[in-house]
Length: 177
Image (cartoon, rainbow, N blue to C red; front, side, top):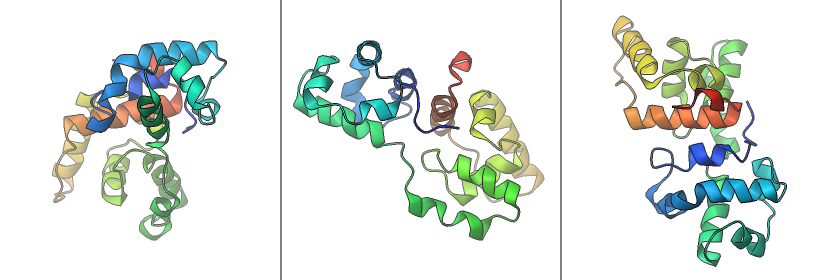
């Protein structure tokens, strides 16, 4: 699991399922951005973080506003350290805590969703990356019913986002739909 994802993951992450509406203007540029970043020698997100505004314009972004938007996009999946602090309080075993540390990298995932994924057998980002939306729905639904949990199955959009981020962070592009 590596949140310093390959630049190719930008194509996966820059889609309507994975980003807030404010980032939608970047979507038409995603393939050009990736191609041009690779030509500039950028291989991972960290290589892009210190690019100048001129360099960002050189990769195909039309203006300074879009360059700033792209710079913010690069950090939107960064996990806040405060989010990780609750893990030790909610986890029963070191294995569970290790799993939660990975699952917490998914947007919007906190202890309840992480516990549901964990109980459904999705204990790492790689497991999610190699799963389909249908598999995740079926397994989480099964856990909710079997344990009589007062939870709802994750929304399809949420699952698609989690799969995309998991694929980006694990370099599992071969499983992309």
